Every structure is written in C-alpha cells, then in structure tokens.
Figure 1 (cartoon, rainbow, N blue to C red):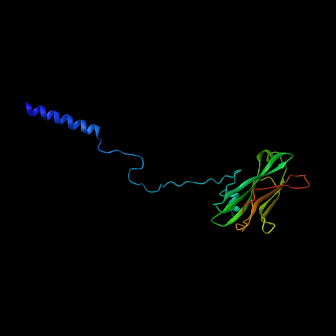
Figure 2 (figure 1 turned 60 degrees about the vertical axis):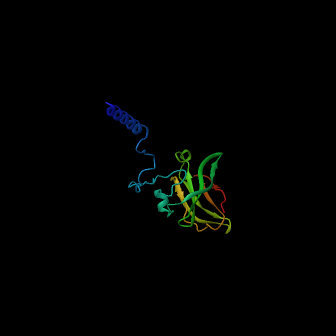
Figure 3 (figure 1 turned 120 degrees about the horizontal axis):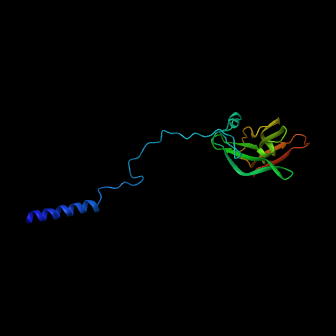
Length: 177
C-alpha cells in the first residue's frame, strides 16, 4: 500500500506542476516571422480638396506620384466666401514642385464657366514657373506643370476669374525655402 500512496502523491505533484508551469506561451510577435503580405494597398485615383497626385488629372499633368503638399494652403475668396484652395506640392523622387488649385463645390455648383491658372511662384527668379491656364471651364481640380524650383524659395499660386468678372481673384500658399 505504501508504494501506491507514494505513487498517487507523485502523480498529484506532477499534475500540479504541469498545470502551474505551462510548457510554452505564445505572445504577439513571438512566432516565426511571416513574409510580406501578398495584398498590396491600392491608392485611390479620386480627386480631393487635399490634392491627390494619383488622380487622373494629376497623372495627365505629369505629377510625380510621391508628391506631397507643403506649406499652408492659400484661399481664393469672393466677397468673403472661399471659392478655391491653392497649394504647393513637392516630389522628392522627381525633385520638382507643382501648383494646385481646388475649386470648392459650393462655388462650382452654381457658377458659370470660369478661368483658372496655377503654377509655382519662384521668389529667387521673381516669376511663376510651370504656369498652366484653363479658360471657360467648370472642372474642379487643376495641377501645374513641373517646376524645377526645389532649390529656391517658392509658393503655390492660383487664380480664378468668375464669369463676368473683369479681374481674376488670387491666392498663394505659404512661402517655402
């Protein structure tokens, strides 16, 4: 009987040890490394007020897909109401700047065709570079041509002349050096 009692005690002790000390634990990030996901993120081609260098209009204008907005946005106003935004974009990969104008929907939905220009103002050369113009349009998104001005102080510039107005309204983004 003695050997059975000791055997039972040993069995209970071993069971308790297994319950109290787990053989292993899994933690987030502790498993084998997995390879890169086969899923790729797709970038939208939709235009946006923030500016999307992957949009169809941006691609047609030759905007480099890595372009990012720099500086604060300028606002084109008519009688105190904002009707368009003006931005400057920078591409590290292409080493270029771009001007960008977005016409606000609140103006666009009731406006007759208007004229728009955009470009990059080069403070060093005292001129607008990459300037592009559209006459009698109702489009919303406008990109300038490339401006090779990354070594200069620049701003995105834009104008909008509403139908019937004798003069264009204008704005510019923050000066960046």
